[in-house]
Image (cartoon, rainbow, N blue to C red; front, top):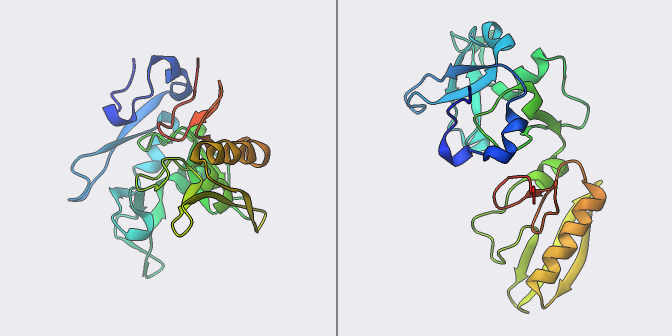
Length: 210
């Protein structure tokens, strides 16, 4: 039976196979800000995860993430924040690799915390996998407008270096250049302006199927 994920996160019938690969359990979040919100976890991890009090963290540094503290809120005498995504990965035997700083939702479904839908990414990989910003001045991911000249530019980071593969008059051309750079350097974790079949769209977070 299909779990009732919120409509804003529904992937569509064609993509449901990507989030139906584990038996699931519902984890209700506590705290005033959570308002009874639920997330979905692997049934096999349920007993381990309910040993924490889970709530939606409103800290600016972790906005929109689901976070955890122990029941008394204190570990070794200090108040400590524990991210649900980190605990899920570690319970499945996938500990944080060196250089990884983010636990990423593969298909951008914020309510899905099953192990197969999470992965460790570096900061650069996480940026490659983010969706298009609502305040984008160009309407395309990875493309910004240089206000003094009115031209469009692409500025990306790879292995600690900055690259500017495009600077010109066309936002569409810039977006294609950005997509090509991402395909070459981040093929396993990028969202794109003009996705091909099997790639993820930066506007919807969905995989293109046709």
